[in-house]
Length: 201
Image (cartoon, rainbow, N blue to C red; front, side, top):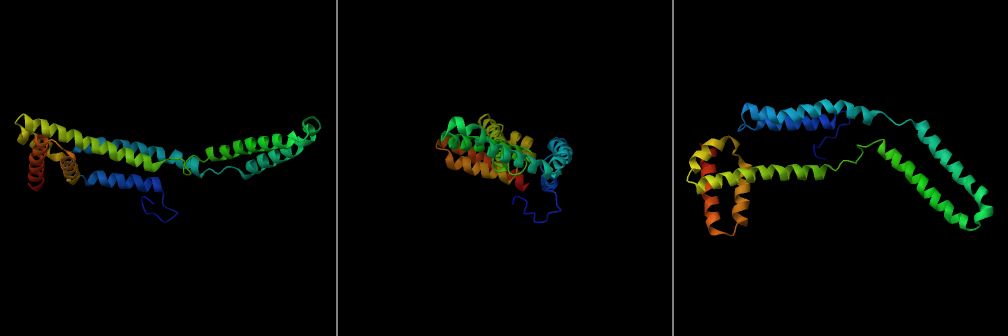
């Protein structure tokens, strides 16, 4: 759903990494060292895709699944024969509890053998990444505000202009809307003006 891939012969992890790779290269405001620093974990993830694909594509032998299921069924069906004389009608409750526990353990084992089948919460991961990216912009904003307070806003804008983009303008607008102190709001407006001038230059 995230990549809108409908073909089964396309590896979704590889397609996602390719998209991340393209997004990093499209960031013109980054210099070579910063772009290489961002690409390094992408390359590391690419090296890990093949072992993970081997885990996913190695099927669980059907004979193993059938054998464990049949063994549990036979064992549970024969359990009342040995305990009925001692437990009486309580054997029904014992049988229910034993069946639930053992079949649940079997089902958990089957799920653990396919850990990538819906077990990784990608939505939470994406939200965490978005939050961390926003925190980076907020830190940059705080540095620009401090430079404005010290009377060195122009120097700070020139120094950090390679990191300015539309996302920073969105953060500036959000901070300006949420800010209640008039003095800080005025400083944010001045920083926003400097950022827009740097982007238009």
